[in-house]
Length: 362
Image (cartoon, rainbow, N blue to C red; front, side):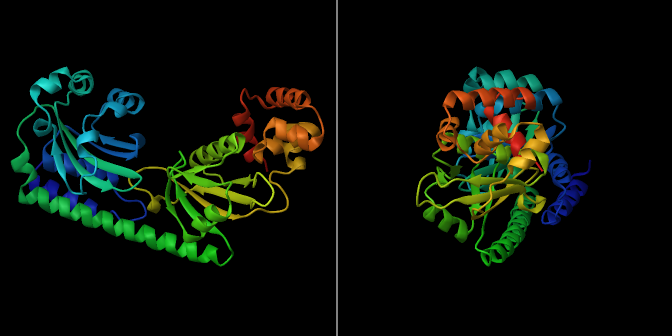
């Protein structure tokens, strides 16, 4: 394709990055053509190299699958680009010597095997909790610094930074409005990854974390000291991201004097995400007097006895089998027997699966 036509198409895609459904694929295709590569990817990572999103054009399904399942953790571009400013370009041909690359498993066993002997990467996001890069792969390696420093690439890079800044600004305005509206009702807002990393917490959310020593942030991730509650929280976040349903989770204070909360989670609107990442929007409010789900709803939904439903509700509320046994005045062996019956009736093999199903009860 003519480079000037590719440039115009790329700039047009960038101009629409602040749309509710931006043309991410058109951007990748444009960058591939402007740079002159064989394929292009957009990769978004949480700190610690946990993959949030992987988008690609002209990458084989086998290469994508291998990267997502294994090679992401060994990506040679991640360490040397850490902390780089958005808009910075990197070239594997410059970063690494031929001797290093010939012995590196990521390069020799993954890149070369899939026809990518050179990667040119632009940092597009470098935040406190996540980082993203747009990479063009080439089947042959050659010096590319002159190209990366050219007027054409500088123009595209500047436009990309401005387009992403506009998108980020719109997302902030959206969140500001939601936070202000819910603050009037004594509620708070969080923007969270499915793994529990908090990307944004409203001022009200920070107050909740301070007032309630039960739900907290640990290394910027949502955390509860009770293992069963933490398990239910993790299951609820994953389910909200995958199912597009609203999930309500009571958060026990854990001991006398600690505030009980209710966490409601749903898949976040696309305009709050970068690329095709999936995020969860959560709101926190003081706990309600009636636990959710109810005993009647659990009995009706799963055909369990009231005693079994009480066990299921206790698990969903974050109690352990031992805690529930003590509260009901029965032996823990009785509760474990009821757990076995619940798993058989509900087709589950783990307590976390019981919690997941309970959270979806009508």
